[in-house]
Length: 468
Ligand code: SAH
Ligand code: SF4
Ligand code: F3S
Image 1 (cartoon, rainbow, N blue to C red):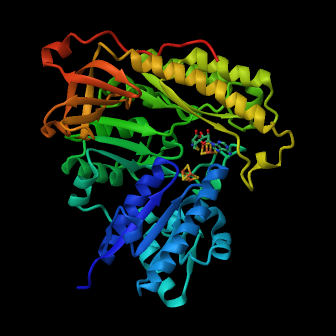
Image 2: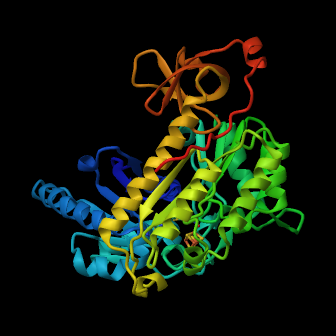
Image 3: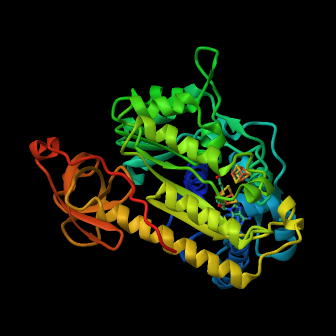
């Protein structure tokens, strides 16, 4: 057998790209590829791109510039390096990439990753290969499952795609064009994946999808299952300690999902629920199909079943036509909800989306100023939330050795990193930790005895702060 070829994947964007990168590695493993963390050492470099905001695709072209030099240098030493572009920029701008970047050998859209071996062969024969049509065959039926050794190397927490694509067409967003129509995977396939992961040491599963709670997979009983029902089933799989899901949409929160939070200790009380804006006028222009009050009511439904539940969100500032009054409505919503954290972005017009044709652009300076005000408010909420953990005993799932000698790092239910001095034997375990202090975003603590854990402090809720 020939020497293994080396593969390096650089992923941008969302969790689905991280998951897809692993699927690409698993697809290319039978072709003799092994993964390397060093791009300079690779025979095949895949850029797994994101198209969500302007800078995302600019980054791809500047990265391709650097790769061209590396490829030329390798060629001078008689070594051929193949460059592939995958992900959402590949899907949206595949033909342009081929035109603009001769360094690229293969362009592959997110629905065609199972065709990667054939595309590489085609590029070898014909020089270059492009596939961005949505194929007839469903990639999930062909992507190979990861090998036990690969699962173990990836750690105790794993993503599993259950839903992909989006039919919601928010006016600012490229996802419906890059990931295609919303589809859900069959329940049995997901159960098989989670059982295989659990058998190989995975303790935490994050179910992912562009609108993960729009999940409506074919169940083994011939009915269509909701995300809530799926969570109930997965919680019963031995070894699975924690379940999460992301990203959810406020319009798709049904009673079964709320019930999962009420009934299943495995379902973590931390929900990423993007709202984008607190202004009904802007929400309508964004085609979100919900009002700020609809969103508040969804939050209340979660809170009514779980008092320790916390939320994070996404916001866009400077959507076309956004006035100071609209923006204040966003600040008011954030103040009222009280987040454990949130992402906020300046609006970026995306080619081909309806909002890109809207006339009333908000000036960049105004966007910058609004972004800073919103981020200040969110930061103050996040640090209040993190500070509230100090002095409490909380459950931590331990993931790996930390950079500091002797320390092991894990995460709380709210994804806060928590460090303790302990033996690496605790990796993979959920243990009560008494939180002694907070350093930046990290909690420092000591493992508590079960008795101390039983005297657990009152529930942790996000403290709303005013300001901005
Ligand atoms: N499916 C998720 C969001 C996916 S995109 C949802 O519906 O909530 C992740 C985030 O990127 C979005 O929540 C939004 O805040 C941001 N985003 C998307 N398009 C954007 C654009 N054109 N400009 C700025 N931010 C954008
Ligand atoms: Fe984009 Fe809206 Fe779909 Fe989210 S719901 S992926 S923001 S179109
Ligand atoms: Fe980016 Fe595509 Fe994810 S545009 S955010 S990589 S779905």
